[in-house]
Length: 318
Image: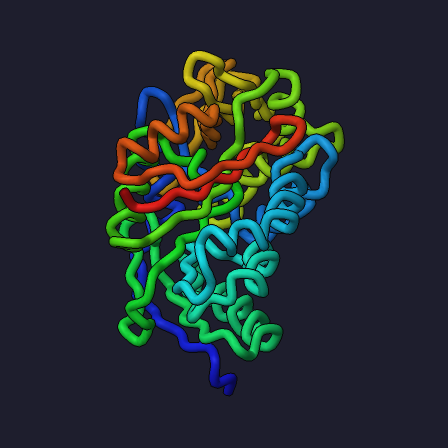
């Protein structure tokens, strides 16, 4: 047993795929939350998407974090309690640990199995680092284990994950972060920028067709896990930038009129009707700083890569 890793299972109540599908397809504008993309095949497809040349986000962010680690540490100071909601495989935090030298690391994820494997791997690589891994739905709460010191806190939220929230939800999440890190607390966050529609549309319509497969895999998951009679072959991937809303939208378009049956429920699709599967909001630096300010933060510094593709912000509790 590794002495530097402890697990805390808060037993988050996950919405089932069945409930999400029945609720989402009952709406006039049909939708399913994007978290249901990530079964095993969906997760594997997303990892491959991150390697595509059109999908600039992970490459640019990793490069920025690697080059900025020492500068960030100079601004935050070392020895903070480092918190990462949705930590997953904890790839990006590795770029910062040696510079930040946190007093403890609290990775959070809704999947306990995934959390255990990634936290154990991290514990082997960083034997000096106390790790308190928490299984939790971080959109509702950010519980910090009582064993963690009361020192200053830094929350790390990379990957432009904030963009999957609506602006009002994003504000609520920032307020939750504000209350969690408390007085003297800080947040380091990666946020995708607004840019040319050509670049944005290409990122979600890669030439290899992996994003299309990723989107359509949701239908295959419904077929396999719910026993629906849905035919993925009569849906098409659609992703586009909605300039008015400032977001990428992903949809599945029904190419013909059809009826979907699930456990006694019937859902009608007209030809051309869409199933909305994801939003990804983009923020200009001014927009994000205003959002952070409205929710109790003040900017310490922000950085934008040389091509204006991505931004990293360091903000502090006001």
